[in-house]
Length: 551
Image (cartoon, rainbow, N blue to C red; front, side, top):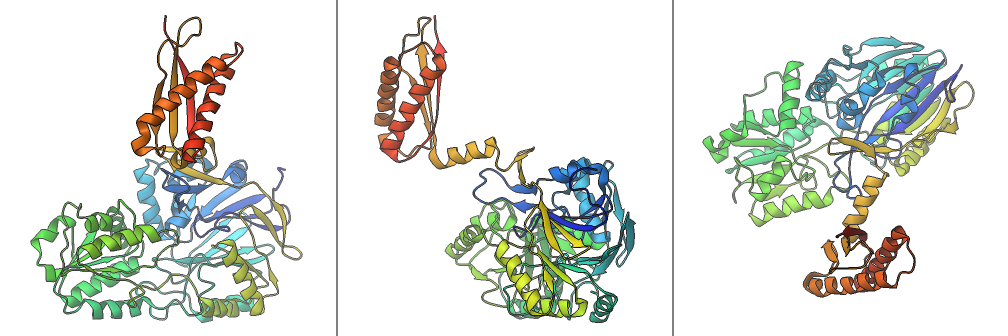
């Protein structure tokens, strides 16, 4: 047996999602085998220049791929399925998902040419499957995307309730979530461990109902004269459905803009979730519509530079132009880290005199994650012996564990990515920690987030670059002025003087070097240039020095 192969025990091991909100990957182990729950990604922050997507490092389970039985997906958000096209084929096991989630995954696999290579098995809502010692049942919970599911995982050592992402919604727009009676019955039967969403653990109020958003948007949009643009997460099909209702009620034509918006609507129709939905027009149709008869729903609520709303706000969209009488509604909540991008778009709109409404102004958004009242209700229904908070930053997980203890859960374990937690037999505890990390998609190549490429690029971004080419003859004598190139070094109008000074520094350092070791001679010149640059700019640019030989 390999180290960390589960024996007569039940293990839980997060590889992602237990140090951050996003990039969810969880393993459960029992009797020599593992199952994976979700395979998500997250988006890069400014510390990863030139990179958009971040994935978990799956080396631990890739080394044990023969012991992995399958990947079970809770729902279709990117932080739960987004890494599938990039990492699933390496694992070589089937994917299991309910119909709507499977539809989104199928499109991803087709785009990457992997639809024949990766097996995708559709499980009906409330359906069941068995993988080795794991008997798994899907339990529908409300969320901001159709078919948000918890997983009821029965094992020889007890039952796990893995929540996925969820909320309580007394009047959901789409779907029929599991009832309190069903969840209470599970608790009566006995739940060993609750593994749950921690995103909104600091919220004192319930997340609220999508029906309330519909009522508020109807009030905002009625009697408006200009165009209305509403931006939201493309994956929030319930919100897209709400926009259809608003368009019908206000006599406006519905225009969907953005590739991901089109895809989610298409999958929604294919799986029966957009019944009685109005006809949909595209961006090219906007010019044919009267402004007061137009409702545009688009991507870009998080300030993404290439998304539709950004191009609309800057006036660079090929088909959609806004004017002073128009309205833009952000039917979303800021994700931490996106503040600058969102502010830039809102400022661009303000400069054009366009009114902007956000969730701070009106009730135009509800979260898909549970606040404290919902957490209290769920823990009260299930009455688990153990609570393991996931889907959060360390502060979220710690607060979730403390809250679980405050409502009567006897055991809590706070994981970090890589924590091997034995849930049974015996008391729940961390018994080991395995190596974890992050990978990034750089162009078409997946590389380590802390590898040489990213470190070098970060240095270039922060400090700039200087190149010096020393022209020498066969005897090693300088025969021409060194060629100097700068990028990103803060010299501006002093550039010519700075370059001339570097030439002098390079020539003096070269002439003063004693010895015949060319590598050491180049390094001596490089250090001299870098020291001069730091003394004159306060920066430590990346410096390259090389020979150009002439006869």
